[in-house]
Amino acid sequence: MKMTMPSPSAPMKLGTRGSPLALAQAYETRRRLSAAFDLPEEAFEIVVIKTTGDDRALIATDTPLKELGGKGLFTREIEQAMLDGDIDIAIHSMKDMPVLQPEGLMLDTYLPREDVRDAFVSPMAKSLADLPEGAKVGSSSLRRRAQVMVNFPHLDVVEFRGNVQTRLKKLDEGVAACTFLAMAGLKRLGRPEVATAAMDVTDMLPAVAQGAIGIERRADDMRAAHMLEAIHDTQTGQRLAAERAFLEALDGSCETPIAGLAELDGGTLRLRGEVLRPDGSESLKDDRSAPIEDGAELGRAMAADLLQKAGPGFFDWRT
Image 1: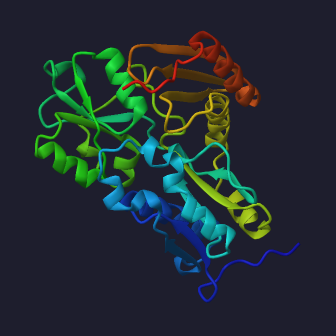
Image 2: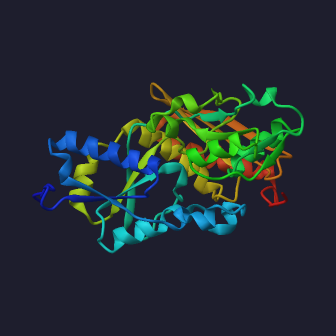
Image 3: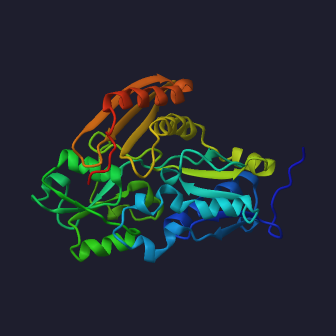
């Protein structure tokens, strides 16, 4: 079957949110597609789609994201635009993606993964250990909140949302003594210096798929499938297969504090996983390895074992 490539007169439409980070990810995708097929950037049109998660009046509240709709806040409108044919592909931060896609859509392309670590950001301390008792730690991530509460119960964790600029302003205003961002996002924005320090993954295991960009398409769009295959990073796909299988088996969402990281060493995949009580009173961890091709099975097995150890009610929302 002959594939028609996009042209400046009929460009391929790349759907994205309109935040600075989302646009940076869209520009990276466009550059890679342009280089892979020796096409001008004008052959790829970036289409900004406003999502529920971009409603500043809604997101500016102190209501936890889980009560506003979870991860779907950042994807529903973009996916609907793709199903309607308004865009050809959609570019996402993978840590924002639900483990299941709507019928008719497929998520099987990943760009090379960036730095997976969390960035500790503070105008007054070099690390969490340097913060005084009762200092406010600002974060909207249930995972980060629970990890801080488990390891630093003397600190006061508060709801804290917004883009990089908003969070830095809140820090300057004294709303919190510190916050966390993703190192990958800071690097893609060209602002790695914002991080006071990068958290070692042994101290703060990152969110599943953190640092990865995923590209979604219609399942029956063979032209998009052919083009995306040229920019897919196999190793990132192998790592995310294990992490997202782990997340799916745990029924993971914005409502459950879960961390997971897969790493490759030759033909072996190492997976570390963590589940936490939302109130930070308990953390369960696992660390095991398997052949790369068994990564998804490893993720599911680890999840099953952790769920058995956790018992009923472990993820109850009590904070």
